Length: 103
Ligand code: HEC
Image (cartoon, rainbow, N blue to C red; front, side, top):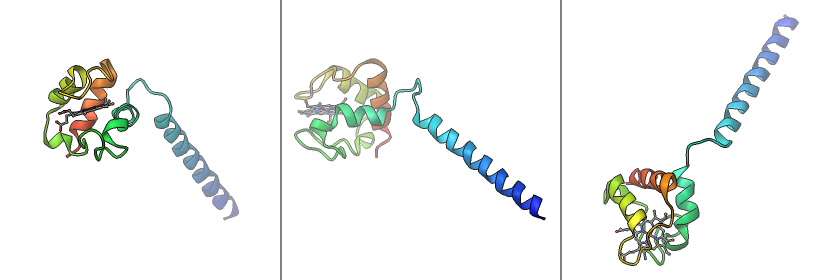
């Protein structure tokens, strides 16, 4: 009985340790660019910390207005007072992909 309990405790400790390991793997560095992070870092100054708008229009429902391709085009080429090329390449693609999901 006592041995069974120990095994149980030990087993769940291992299980928890395994979960913790998985978490740190997703939080750690990965090859994928995190679009949400890019947007928070590069776009919030003008578009607001919650993308609610500021000196520039809100982006929080952008996916309802534009497709991913159109958003990417605006990021790369600018639009009126929106400066072009704030982020490029993979970062621009990740940002467009993330913003297109906001509806
Ligand atoms: C220097 C300030 C500034 C930064 C930084 C900035 N923007 Fe903008 N953005 C603007 C302004 C100003 C407009 C409004 C353009 C206009 O006159 O129509 C705009 C417009 C937009 C639009 C069109 C919105 C609409 O409803 O038509 C999109 C999409 C956009 N920005 C995406 C981004 C993304 C993504 C980033 C970060 C990579 C970013 N912006 C960073 C200033 C900025």
